[in-house]
Figure 1 (cartoon, rainbow, N blue to C red):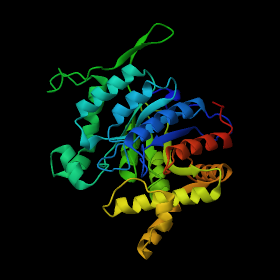
Figure 2 (cartoon, helix red, strand yellow; figure 1 turned 90 degrees about the vertical axis):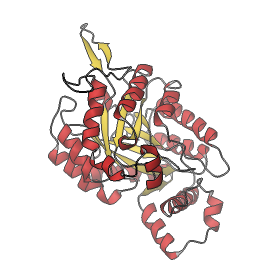
Figure 3 (cartoon, rainbow, N blue to C red; figure 1 turned 60 degrees about the horizontal axis):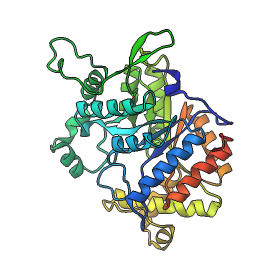
Figure 4 (tube, rainbow, N blue to C red; figure 1 turned 30 degrees about the vertical axis):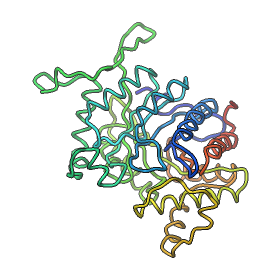
Length: 362
């Protein structure tokens, strides 16, 4: 893995590289087609403004999240961008055969050489019934328990290096490792770098053991952020892939021109999360619907807790919150996910954040 694939270049006055996590959210009154068009515009905008990478997250059976097929979306984004790194944040490994993932991301690497990341998670990214349908099995615990073995198999397919005598020795993920030529004329294989994603200590320890970069889901597991990052850094073992630990964190942040509008949008996004957590997933409600909603005391308690970890407000307020979070966690990179009812507001949020940090103009 090259330094560009992890650290990137911090532009403007940003203390660390800034990146994007896209769930391709669909607001009430809008369509998945509109949401996907927004993703294209957002990838183009953030590339032009100097964001380092753009990841898409795998979710299933959620009407308000149109990112069920990251590889398909990433191929589309690759056709509309030139420089920004593209990747999964992440692909849920237990949902898929390792060979299929190796083929999909080998194809993406062939389409966009040297700018594809393969972020992997072990959660289903959905409810139990949907996970069972994806995996054609109701033994869901086995997928998570077998994650290290699945990861090892996937890595072998990506590197095309099963040992002699292995039952998969004659199976090849095609397209496979791409032969890249250095300025000195030396050829070396290159394939998408693997990242481990997590919201607890399991993937932090595994990433450290394997010497892999680590992405932590601070945006929905804030209480575990510092313990997981400490565990990753304390137990990290240098590898051929990475000489020292590198950790990014996913951050929920929304910047608007007006502070009141930010509060309205964040309330609507929180209502969407309430419905998801109570088995009623739907499209992201409008701020007007959220303001008219009769929240129960338990729901209000949840929203207060949830929104405490959403950085929102004006561009300057969001920048201050991001800077504080980076200092507290020591994160090497901030991956921002912005949730709003409309695509236009999501685009505006990233533009305002770029302005606040003095990133290059489009």
